[in-house]
Length: 613
Ligand code: ADP
Ligand code: ZN
Image: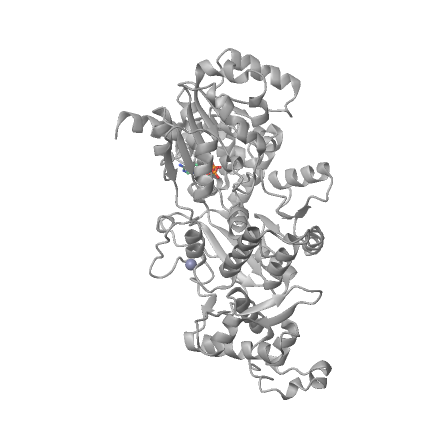
């Protein structure tokens, strides 16, 4: 190990309490220290902040962090300070007294790490004032500079002007969004100079993905929540109305939860968000307005009660689970009708330009395929983001397909079943909805059917042995594979496509999956992680006591509980039961500053006392 390697490792352990780097962290830090410009693309939870905070910890000069997330800055500063950094922030929401204190410290060279909003950096001559000590400029959420990304911020476009006045500092752009267009756009727009690119693998191995057909939204959401008692989670729904309805149902079922959507007053929204961050509420039920600026690292599950608009959206929203690297679960409740609704919403203000329309259709097809094809979910996601997924022989062990909860029908059976369903759609000539066609196949007559003589058709009762839920799921799967389509009129009509007709003539291939009934009390299983096996089991009662104690301290300090310690650290404490500061220092996530500040009190809790904050 080189001297620099050793120094970096020591700094990581001292500040953050981690023994090893996550992939590409060390490389990014080394490049930055060598004065090179860098592009760092790591998935959520990949540990991007260490890439720019560690250089600040070495005391070689000032690191400037440009971030659009003003709401988050105070928490980021608090967390950096707990790692022993002299951190400050400058943004428009800062109180006057804190602002002048920050300026005073900056002027006297007593700041290692400065967070600024892009707006603040663009005005006046802050850049010139920082220049002498500045060694690195980090641009967080760098995809905001790109039109191609999903969160364009016009101010980001003007950063390059400021950077021109700061030629000596290295530049580091960080993002979790990895499509090639966005990447190149970032390098160009931020005027990175021959940047070194550090592109991480997009897979999140600690997430267990499940995609299941939706048949009872409220009950299925509750089912997931019940697998995670007292744990933090997010439920995403498509509309405000659905958010309110789901949240009310969950509250009635005894779940500690808060709603969050754009229709609420700003103050109300802030209050709900703070409750969730402070662990006063376990679950937040939200539209996708909730997310930017959620840094709670111990979110143990994310449920999508509706199908999201694209795989990118899904990756980003589900990615808020398990940022701490511990196991977490992401469940998508799929219905093809959601895709139809997305299409309808996208076009409600008029027809789209042909290229937008093609892009939209592609997005919907891809998220549909993710949700309904019986294919390893980790594999589909990785490939979507341009990375190969080397699936282990026994499957990933962390998705419903590989865990054997969703089964593929054998090819011949799939084809035969598909042909039966397609024939029914064909015979009804696209004049009926999916519900009607399913009833026809099940052989459940009603007046409408009898009056049209449909109960005399050959397809009547052709799949009478199957359940209605299974048939609905297959219809959805045939839709996302393009064999059926749905008319978006006032009444959604199911119609066979030319591909569907071709399949009926045995031209083409089809895949159908079916849910395998599970034992009632399924636990969110952990993905295979060999290193976990040797670990001692945490004492759950002690873990709960430590969490309660952490909450109390966080409340006193006015910071979110994760700033004090992560769940992962508490779990390890509850398993190892350290008795001395020396033993506590060995726990992952316990850096020197935290050891000194919180160590003695936590040791008391572990020893059986109540602690003493
Ligand atoms: P990102 O910004 O890429 O989503 P963060 O910087 O928020 O990721 O880090 C995610 C989590 O991983 C944080 O809780 C952080 O403390 C933790 N972490 C960062 N680096 C390491 C490491 N080398 N070992 C263990 N945990 C780490
Ligand atoms: Zn899998």
